[in-house]
Length: 342
Ligand code: F6P
Image (cartoon, rainbow, N blue to C red):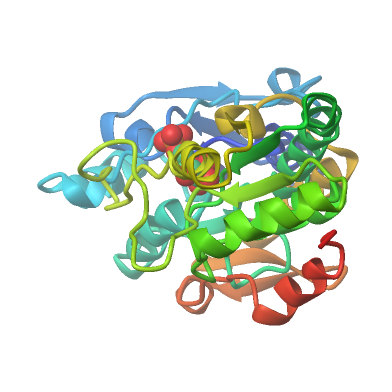
C-alpha cells in the first residue's frame, strides 16, 4: 500500500512520534510506502509532498513540532478544494491517508471519507478538548511546561509581594489551566467553563495577601468575566471559523491592580506551551497511536480514528468522535478549590 501522512492545525509535541511509529511499523511489518504531505491539508490541495522512509524518521521521536509542517488550511473553504484533494491523492497512487490533527483537521478527514477517500484520523491537541479520547498527546507536555513556569513565577511573585496572573492556552476548554494550576499549586484557576466575577477575584487576592500568600492565578485564554465576553487578539476568524483568543490575563491583572491597589503582573505563556520535546507520557501515547493508525489503514478501517480509552488504544468512527467536545466538569473545579489558601 501507499499511504499519505499529514499533520494539520496547531503543532504540538508528539507529532513526529506518531509519524515515526506509523512509518516504522508500516514499512517493516507490511512493506507499505509512505508519502508525507506538507503543511496540513495544503499539501494534498497543492500537491506538495515528500517521500517518508525509515531513514527519514530515524531520530525524530524526541523532536518537537512536525517534520511535515502544519497549517490551518481548509480545503472546504476553497472552491472545488475537496475534489482537488481527492484528485491529487488518487493521481499520486495513494491508497489512503493518515491525518493527524484536532477537530478541524479531522472534520475535513470525515468529509473526505464521506466523499470516498480513505482517511484514518489521529487526534492531537494541547487543549485536550476532544471527547472521543481520554487524553490527546501534547497536553501532558503543555501542562508540564506551564507547571514549571508556575514554580518559577511563585518565587518571584512571593519575593515582590505581587499578584501574578498567568494566561495559558486551551481555547474553550480549561484543561491546561486546571491541570497545570493543580500541579503548580495555583491560588485561583479561571476556566472558560465557569464565568468569573472580577469583584470576587479581587476579594480573593486580598484574602490571599492577608493569609501571607502572594497569589498566583492561572487564567485560561478563554475565561470570561461575568457580564463580559471573551477577549480576542484580532478581529475575524481563521479558515475554520476559530477566533484568536488572548488578552484576558492582562485585562484581569489591570483590574486587580486598580481595585486592590496591590502590585500585579501578568504573564502570557503562549506558544511556549506547544514547543520543544514531548514528555515521556506524550511520546508513548503518540507512538502507540501511530502504531494503531497504520494497523487501521492496513486493514482498510477508513473513517475511523485512534483513541485512548483508559490504557487501551481503540478505534472510534470519526463521525461519532467529532460530535463531542470535552470540557472541564464542575466537580473537577470544586476539587481544585480545596487547595486555595483563603
Ligand atoms: O488549539 C491549540 C492552540 O494552541 C490553542 O490553545 C490556541 O488558542 C491556538 O491553538 C493558537 O493558535 P495559533 O497557533 O494559530 O496562534
